Length: 636
Ligand code: ARG
Image 1 (tube, rainbow, N blue to C red):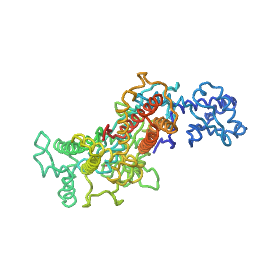
Image 2 (tube, helix red, strand yellow):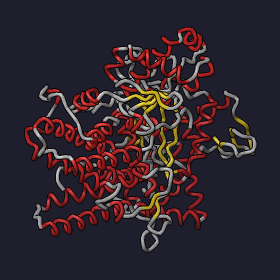
Image 3 (cartoon, rainbow, N blue to C red):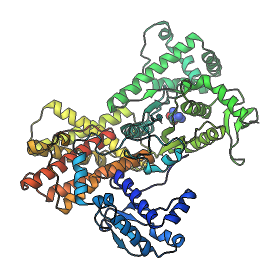
Image 4 (tube, protein in one colour):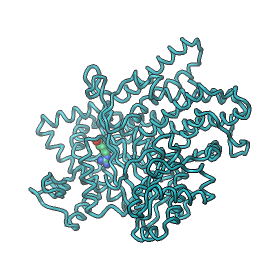
């Protein structure tokens, strides 16, 4: 990957962290003005090293900078820490945010936010559609660098940042191949890519969701030749005709190609005709693509996924320019008649033009990178390109990214990121297959998830003696079944292989979609019962100052206030499982709170505050699930 950032734990309240960093740095610089000026001159200002506290007993944040500064400042770490604390105590902006700091061990400074600051932040987030998550801002022009600083991305209120429109981010995902099966690997890409796009969109980035379908290449020679033979009437008509099961169509064509030399020769000629723009060949190609597209679309509609098709064929006219550019950059080497880029003399090269003059998968991806970074109208003007595919393509992407970099197509601050994921395995730990050993069709997989969710639901209703409308049962089964499939995929670290197990993903207990959906249903019930006190919107000014007292309340408050941090983390690190884990923890922290602390039966002053906390929990859970692409329910 190019331009990635180091991993960091989630921290409570990004905007506060940012503010406190400034305050601590100010205190440090006021205490040692000369050293500070000298440090600034080298471009490395004195750093208080403020981080989220590693343990709750240390408060909310800890500053670890005194130790490394001991040597350059020629002071003991404790002396440095006390000098900083002394300056902070004199800063009214700081004392309004934090309780008096404590110095621990050799010179760590522990900071605890004032309870009223936390309570006010909860109140601010209740009814705020962004729930405290700032909109992303463009990096200052000179330093795409600052942005590469990861979660230090500027937050609103940072006076230094002018509102520059953001460049598009491209998420290249799903990307099945025409006339072939859309398999579970594509399903993973579809689910993960959609979630990443949702998070980026929520942060305010213009996102181009691109479906880089395999709609071009030599396989079309055999497909079209086969089509012309078995369904010539399809080419006569103006309207579309159903070609039947395209997957078996593909298999038949492939079989003939492998066994029949005449068919093989005809297919080769067909490729040339197609590339030359022959109208009949193009018509056949369009027919094949349209039919596949309709089949893919059914899956996307069902999963509520939006993706814009821009297949490999789009880049076809741009391929010769790629080769020319690489030649002009002095990167091309001819090897056995093929045009190659050698990245590493000991490794096989990237072949950009084969000896027969044909281009390949890598050439198309190079053309795509060039186009995506180039400014409009001859490109997308994007700054960040994200590719969601199985880990098996990691070396392909590493190679094309390196070539693009050397060719100078990556603008300053431009990021190229491959988001790899592992295999989907069956119960037995082997590649997912049906009982008869065939590849699993996505439609069947989704059907089964919904059917099983329905059976579980009917059993639960019978147990509880509940009567429900059929429409309700269908709605819940669909939301739970599809939600479970998505969540199971998103909640594991995507790099590892994952075992596809219906019973586990549909369980009401554990880190599953049903568990989270159920927590939300519990909250919705509370909202119904809490009635007028469940604050509709704090913005309407109806919320009195909130007050919390119980440790379980505070645990929930602190967890809720780290929502902004986890969102920014997913935006940077592209790991949806972090959001899942965070939401799972939220449900657990909430359930612990709700089991122990009275809400509806609380005394009036506490009741309003607790209902507000529940409201924020519900909104956060709902938004979090939406960002995962999971439909939520108010009853189940
Ligand atoms: N069609 C490819 C496949 O099925 C995935 C394409 C991924 N995107 C890309 N720009 N190469 O494996």
